[in-house]
Amino acid sequence: MLADPSVYEELAAFVDERDWAQFHTPENLAKSISIEAAELLEPFQWTPDAADSDIRDELADVLTYAYLLAARLGTDPDTLIRTKLARTREKYPVDKSRGTSAKYDQL
Image (cartoon, rainbow, N blue to C red):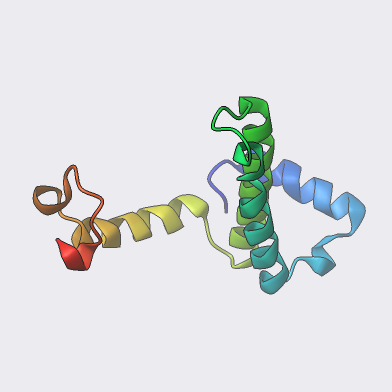
């Protein structure tokens, strides 16, 4: 179901061993993504030179919950990303958006 079944299988086994799936409602997983995404900023709190290892640890937490939420919704992260990318390509055509950070309605 997910992009790299071996990663998902490892993650699913980890969750199953601990009987945590009961807590993994879409709402709880979305909250966890948001919390972990905020923690991704913590290594940068007082310095722009955060340690890569700290950033990777926090990013792994975000991705873990994102994988779990995708699985809970019965979808594949790669499919989600490609679908969204196709819509974003339409909103941000290269000829109008190249080199600018302007929002699509300001192009």
